[in-house]
Figure 1 (cartoon, rainbow, N blue to C red):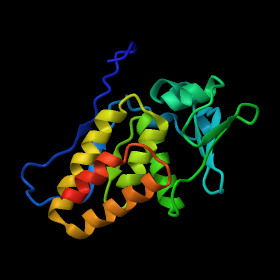
Figure 2 (figure 1 turned 120 degrees about the horizontal axis):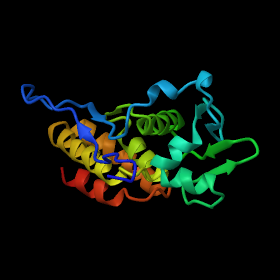
Figure 3 (figure 1 turned 90 degrees about the vertical axis):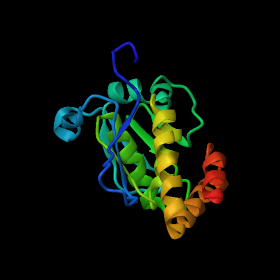
Figure 4 (figure 1 turned 90 degrees about the horizontal axis):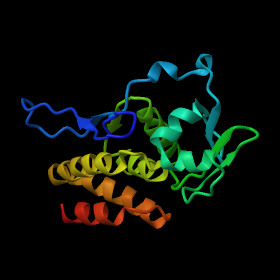
Length: 193
């Protein structure tokens, strides 16, 4: 727990009755549900977008600073190693994409930001690597626990579905090749599955 009394261990939804391995995993956020504060009518003070354009997400610096080490460092004027920049005058964070599938990367990063507000993460073979990349880049306070849950799910899916395992391995290898850190372990685990 941190000083606000928040528990930073994510929980996962499991269904012991359903023995078939589900490809999608829902991970409950360990953070309080503040999703009602998202939106332009609730006084957001930062825009989050990508260098190559696309959707812009509006959020709150105070909320993100509590949950994300990267955002906290950015908002305090420090340089970060997450391929993003912060323009304090425009109050805008701009991210670089790491792979050729920009839309999946954007969607996954926005999912990780919403996770900071208490939203669930929905992980599947198509977005698992992008969500892990988002967790790494944001350096969420619950990053390691959440990553562990995702990696365990990825390995379980890969053991039961070779096609999905191959897809996830390719995506993880693509992020690793693009310079994202932390994919070596999951690449090895998926390759062994």
